[in-house]
Image (cartoon, rainbow, N blue to C red; front, side):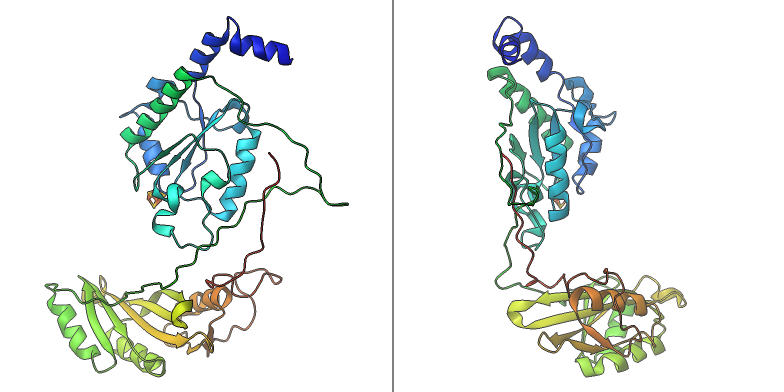
Length: 347
Ligand code: SF4
C-alpha cells in the first residue's frame, strides 16, 4: 500500500494527482459563525466559487477542505476536530474572519478557542467578515500552494497510551484569556435630534442618570434600591414589557451590571423606544429586586440570569434550576468560572 501511495504521489501519476486535488477542493459544510454568510455569498451565483473547482459538500468523508467561518467556541472546537479527523488525506484548513485569527470581537470571551490550536491551518483570511472575493482568493492561494508543493498527508498517527481503565479523550484545549480591566460603557451621551427622547429624559432624571444613547434609545442608570420605583414610573409612562434581561460581569471592578430592556406594545409613539434600565450590584452579594410582578415578561429572563450568573432576583418566585441541568455547575457564565482543563490527545 505504501509503495502504491509513493507511486501515485511521486511517480508518473504525481502531477495528475496534484492537478486533480487542486481543482477538486471540496469544503465541508461547517458553518460556525456569521462569516458563514460570506461563504454562502462566495458560492452563490454572483461569485460562483465552483468555477475554481470548490464545491461545498455535506459529508466530511468526501471532502478535503475545511473553511472555518469565524469564531470557534469550546463546544464547536470538538466538532471541528472530529470533522477534520473524519476527512481523508490530503486535507486542508482555511480560517476566515478576525474571530478565527485571534478572537475578533470575542477576544476576551471565556469560551473562545483558536482554530489553529485544534487543527493545522494553511491560510488565514483577515476581515470581519472577509469579503467573498477574499475567500476565493484564499482558495486560489491554496491552489497555488498545491501547485508548488505536493498534496501531502497532514496526519501522522501515533499511539497514545491511555490511563489504565480509561479511554483516550479527544477534547479541545482551554484558552485562558480574561480581560484585565474590562471597560464597560453603557450610557455615553450623544447629540441626537429626538424631541420625545429629550422629554422622556427630563421625566426620568429624578430617578437616576438618564441619557440618550441613540435615536429611540435611552439608558437609565439607577441605584439598586430605586430599581423598582423606576420600573413603576416607566410603567406609568406607558412602557409595558421587558424585552430582555442581561447581566454583565465585571470581576475586576467587583460588580455585576443588571440591565432590563423595556419597551411598549400599547402606546404607539413609545413602540420604537427602548429603555435600558440598569443598576450595579456588588459581586460579593449579588442580589437585586425582581421586576417580574411589574413586568411579567421579565420573569423567565430573570430565572435564566439567576441560573447563568448566580444573581438572585429577590421576589421572583422561582427557586430551582431553570435553564441548566440539575447537576450543572453554579453560575457558568461568570468570567471567573473555572472550566475543566481539556487537552487533545492524538498526533
Ligand atoms: S469575523 Fe466578524 S463576521 Fe466573522 S465570525 Fe467573527 S464577528 Fe462574525
